[in-house]
Length: 413
Image (cartoon, rainbow, N blue to C red; front, side, top):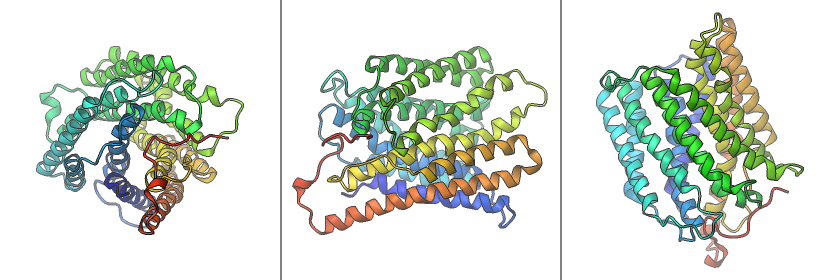
């Protein structure tokens, strides 16, 4: 029952809520702001909440789809990951290069260990329609390694040595369009049939999606690396095409059927993924009066809260239920309140990019809405964990338990 990755997910999710609340109150001038909080807010979600969950889900889903028993927790990987994350979360606000290098190195080692674990798994799935998420996970982790190197180098002056023209963009693109994009795609490929009870619309298109994302992310990384739109623009087009094809596979089987709110979370979260894409041509063209610099500085915040965290709203309660309450029918998480609050927060935040005179107020409102959307999800996850522990202490028979990926698929009706 004890799952150390998911317990750390709860911790980092709680810290993400606290730091978002801190930013909201600071925007209203109710409390003083703290240096480094902008980076901490982002990393509590990306490096903390989502990475912790992904480190458990990727090998577990890959094993389940291939008919293998669930893998045991590899404590060396867990310790390296969490020691690295904690060291980074201390070192970044202090701008301590020694701590940042140590933390980045430990996370890098943990990622390498996870890649080896996934690579050691059998490549052949139980049937032709399953087990296809593993290549996405390995590719995403490969981009994560690159993001770690460049991100660590931001604080150590490696950008000039590596001849990177815009290091911060390379770091963001490797982690967002690389790591997270691939992990989410792999989760959809592996979990969608079980979550909805239906296969993807075109299962044979999964290979095309994979390669579109691979070369798209490569272009998006190389573009700011060498300072050339000859890589960025084709990369953006390829990555967008792959993501749209993925979403079409998800949406088509559900047309004409009742959608659970969790599926709305999963699909509409990608609006905030595409928002920077929609304005990218205007930024590249340097249209006079268009706040390109403001978008580049602030859009990652909306990307993290609107796309990444909202995706987690749906998927995390589902897998927490499978782990802690395996005898119950799991459902995608979220509510109509969390759905509306997240999207309204995103629109308000983006409004602040254009309305500079009201930017502080609007961003304060946006973060307040994101906190309001996050708290019910966090409380729901905590209730799942408490019930799981209570039932384990009551000695629920082992026969009542099922492994991750086993059991009857849930339906969306």
